[in-house]
Amino acid sequence: MTSTATRPAAGETSGQAETGPGARPGTVPPAKRNVPDPAERARARKLQSRRTQARNWLLFVLLAGPNIALLIAFTYKPLLQSFYYSTLQWNIGSQRAINVGFRNYTDWLTDSTTPQVIGVTVVFTLATVGGGMVIGLGLALLLNQKLKLRGPARTIIVAPYVLSGVAVGLLWLFVFDPNFGIVAAVLGAIGLPSPAWYNDPQWALVMVIIVQLWKNVGYIALIYLAGLQAIQADVLEAAALDGAGPVRTFRRIILPLLGPTSFFLSVTTLLSSLQSFDIIQAMTKGGPLEGTTTMMYEIYREGFVAGRAGYSSAVATILFVVLIIVTLVQLRFVERKVHYS
Image (cartoon, rainbow, N blue to C red; front, side, top):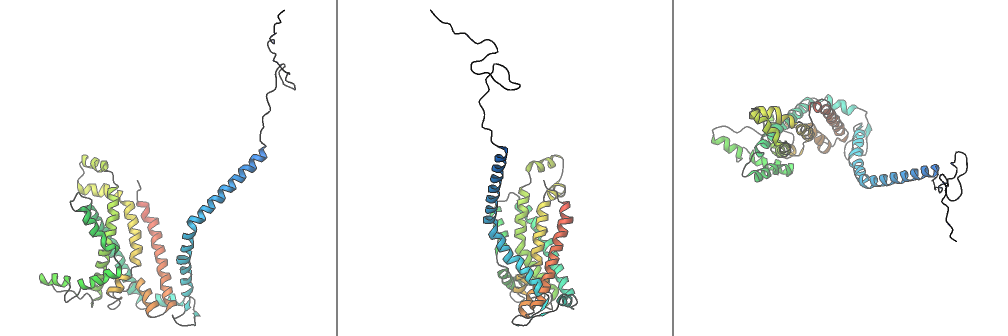
């Protein structure tokens, strides 16, 4: 005899039937899954988050820690010390320091030479910044052309910027020498007298401005050249197709697109000019008749020549405040007119 296996009827399954409320009769419950506890998952996520934060903080300390330490040691600490010293009547080499409050500030602001020092600083800064940006942009436009000696020309123009300010000043002392200098020889060849560069305060200021421009204009030209090369060629081609001439293209397209570059240079060169010292020290030492004494040179002369550390610190603090105000004004009003693309 053969036995035939009977298939389960419809709605039935082999094994035990599912039980419980809502269970369909004749079905087997699926295997129970190991669902993690929500509290365990929350603890695991929290632990992972803490580990990630710890790694990030460790990376921050390793990378930024040395820079922050150097910044505190060589920037913020001297600033605080300078402000503290500015409230003292203290001469270098003396063991006695008297707290005089803000008297050093009032003494400098009411000094008879202060208006001249401020005027020299303003003229020197505006001439070196404005003249440097105009000349630098002109050189950049020239170097952006397809010239045969463009590479060597760039090197020659940028070379003065990497030289020491003292070396530049000593070099130009011979150039402006009234007896055997190149300037005197050229002016004499065309029948003009050589100005009294070292005796006339106005001509002395013109002289140090020329030297400062010669040193910095290569850097300005290099930055402007990078900005010019970042302008897309199709923009200039579209302007040419629209009939725009070179002058109109420069005014309407090139200058606006160089806005971010000009803003960067205006900030950096302004700060650099306000802090210029080495060329003046090498060429004129602030003279003649205070004709080339800027605020920065006043700080050096009062602190290291006259030994008035408190008075010098007061002038340094005033210059620092001026730098902050000028930078904030540039960021507030000038940057709003800059179009970044």
